[in-house]
Amino acid sequence: MKKRYDIVGSFLRPDQLLKARKLHSQGQISDTDLRQVEDRAIRDLVQKQVDLGYGQVTDGEFRRTWWHLDFFWGLTGVEAVNRQRTAANFHLSEAEVKYQADSLDLVAKLSGDNHPFVEDFIFLQDLLADYEGVDAKLTLPSPARLYYDLTSTEAGLANVKRIYPTKEGLFQAIQSAYETVLEDLYQAGARFLQFDDPIWITLVDRERFEQIYAFRNEDFDQLAQSLAEDFVQVNNSVLKGRPDDLVISTHNCRGNFRSQWASQGAYDPIAPYAFVQQDFDRQFLEYDTDRAGGFEALKDVPDTVDVVLGLITSKSADLEDPDAIIRRVEEASHYHPLDKLYLSPQCGFASTEEGNLLTEADQWQKLTHSRDIARRIWSDADHVH
Image (cartoon, rainbow, N blue to C red):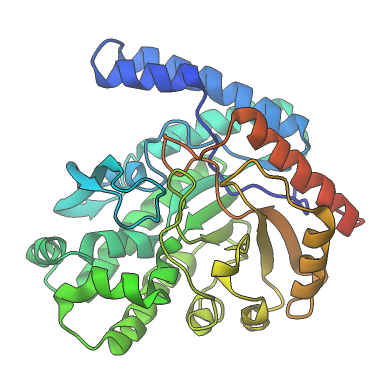
């Protein structure tokens, strides 16, 4: 059921789940043992979301290490790799925070056959059978994000070209793989999907963009425009054939690792691409700090598209001033109709299994706070027609 208050997707992992995942990585418990712990944690999470009144719930991404890589690793042709790096792309308070940076390599032709996320979704869907008016939402990294991850390093781009010599061939392969997964999810009952797509702000943050793409030795303005066109093309190729009753949202943020951010910049430069040309039903947009700029870019979002304003931060336990949030929603309504606006945190609470720097109690208090503010703004907050 659609409500004016929403969630992005990920939740803080309970301690018992984190301990089980560590034991599993050390070979001390079996796949079945880990699955049982995950199942129990997801059951509890779903109940808490329902108890708060949320109409679309997720499994918290509890079976994942990363918000995106686990899905990519589930595609045929993609291999997980592990590299030790520093968290240089995030603005961390520690001087040199080191973490294990997983990645991926393309080792064969892409395919979406028998993706493990389908079984994961079925478990979530089955949990909701006894709840009236509650829908399952599954978050996935966008097709454009897969394109980005495969081609945003010199070694990665060279590797891709060995398997797909042309960009068109790569795009067709990504489209086909995603269409296979989406068809399987749809047949399993999925009607609400979300493509997480934080790559767009990389095009706005010039410093970070130049760091990433220095190896291309191209004019940066032209490259940014070319990539924006690529992102639109690869995302829309998957969206265009979806069934009429399959709602697909997109989520745009600026990084969310251990409560820190990666990129900054307003939406205005990318709005003609990300807002105007992409065929999503809903746009989840980060707006919890001034790094996102103003609401002016919302004028480019078609009036038929829902905009979920990420005005509640998931990066800290501090509770926002309700009156300030209400004023910001009113300001946003100058650029997009109020009856097409919604409220949520700017991102999930745990884009990686480490999670943001707040407690589970803080997390639920934030979602209660967001719900209560939404009820003050919209008379139909609990039942949007």
